[in-house]
Image (cartoon, rainbow, N blue to C red):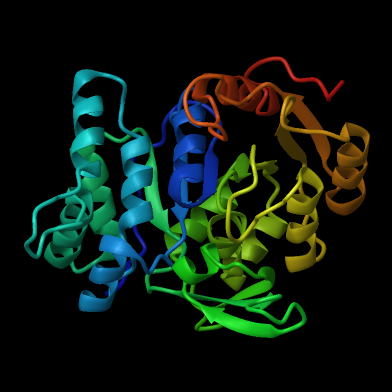
Length: 332
């Protein structure tokens, strides 16, 4: 399956924003940022190998559609049409037949890919159908496999092994020390590179730190586009450590991992939650020394429901400050 270079949907109002990532973290960023601008592009990782996405990837040789679907659902509007389609594309079939476990949105994306023969064109058609307030693009038009180097795996705490696959990496009991992709130098989606080059703001995080936040940057052309961009680069830290790949992580650890994986990686602003960030002086100093970034502490965590979830309105307020759409000040 290919992607041909084309002009995307008509430009919206507000700053041109590109959000990188995947899964629930990227969806949270998109739900927040579409309150600030409707000129929004999601650039989504294509390394998922579990569930419905993994089945479609293996059966058809396509990029896994699940994270792309979640981004499209997050960009649906708040009117009746948008809310309805957001639920519908996320619907997962039950029962005991071949459809069990498949998401309707994954099948819809797969259908448009087969009809158009083009990854980007198919996603643009789905976005148009949903009335999505932005565009969704893959980091690459071929599926990628994550390979992690992990220490402390099994009974020997000094043992080092390689783990293959996003699901295996995300759930590992060992300590991830680095990740890479297979193939090692995949070609980036041309439209994704164009969006990054034209962006006023580039967002990274929150999300599964290795498999969602770092993984898209493993595409060399995309990493270079982010590094050399004149856009304001923003990293949003996670609120809580996730069992598996980031067990026991602190705010400092998220930053250190980013620097260890990508040396000389410039960031302008790191957004962290006031209640989730301890040792603020140390975090601020590390942001400045390791990334060249300012630390912006704001209450961005949801106070209702599941722990570790960003509140879209509070996160939107922080984004508005950073993008110049509202007040901005450094942490206190």
